[in-house]
Length: 214
Image (cartoon, rainbow, N blue to C red; front, side):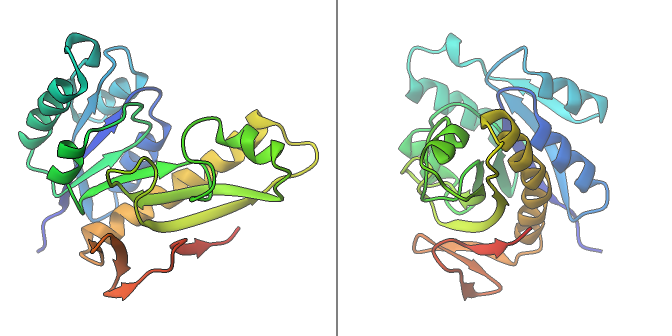
């Protein structure tokens, strides 16, 4: 019988995407070996503890610079020997050496239809731009912030009555469905990054990844 793919999840806060990954892991092909936070009071750590998942804190404020923090985080992750590292609301920029160390096995989820709106405040930016749709992207992490190859996206409609908060809520629902699905593809050896491009079942994915529609 094939063993479950070991993953480590990095968080900074509430951990709602972590919870979706935990819930899905109960009947999936991956196993969360550890949850690591850069913030000691992140509620996501409690979510992990409730399910008996190992937790670690690598507090960024205790390190002199990003390089030192990145190395400490890398050493902590590598104790668990994961096949995949999953960023789930991890609010720290990661340096080039760290990203290269996990090249092809580092995923992130971002609340916009990349390449639109990298960075913060994506929901308000989509509304301010007059967009009719918004959504979520799961992508491989590369040295360019929110710039790695997109694996999959899901969309929501922006309604006239929407504000940043209501839009965030709609997008979050999509995130909770999409992220476990993509992690499962990786765990099944279906997903890989090659030459800075995403492939599923050895087929090159388009620039926006697989489009999952509402």
